[in-house]
Image (tube, rainbow, N blue to C red; front, side, top):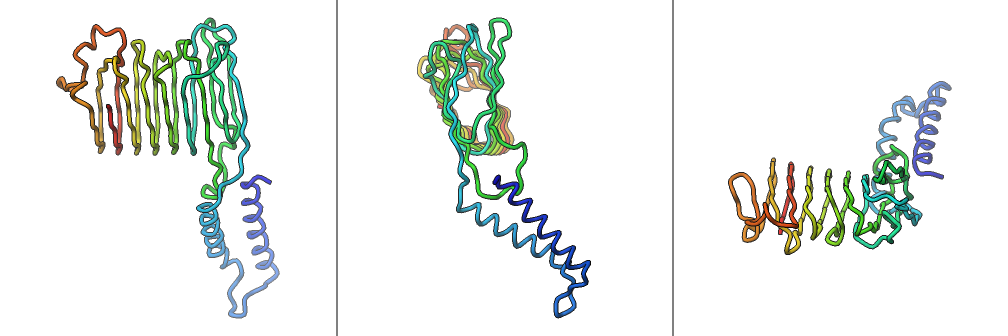
Length: 265
């Protein structure tokens, strides 16, 4: 039985039982109507469910999946991921856009549009579950991408932990939108590309490989930003490698952050 079905079943039985007792005129010895116990009982059950969720993790099944390239020359990959751990790195086969292991299952949409393969990946789970703080099903994904196919990578991440090793990948554009998360990124070592990073209450560590020039512009709220200025000296409102304009390999990076801790090295 799904845990959201179990939770709703308990709540409906509780409400129905108290309403029936109230209709039958059943009262406690002190004259209190049983319906008056509804909210205290619900709060007690909710508290118990939260405590159970703190110590138990729900069982999940792993799904292995391969996304065929279908003869496309480029890829547009959009990944949505919530609670759990996400790992992305090189390693897919020459005829694959991606392959990986997905705990909790995978909902995928794949379509070829001209020479471009459009891929959308998200967890295969209910849009909303109740209660929100029950036993957790942690969604751990380990995803390998094709290192030779030019790929535009868009990531929508929730409260998760991400380890993104992109150093060997051919990324044409990186778009990261994350909430309360802990993210580590090793940027691609080749090509000229953009990286747009939008953070909430997050921790972000960015490693820029040797030989990759960078221009870094940041719009920050209550954020702590640390940048290796021996490599990327400050130049007015941004940080930039001395050879950024002429370098064969370079990233043009923008960071928009709220209450975040950001380190660029």
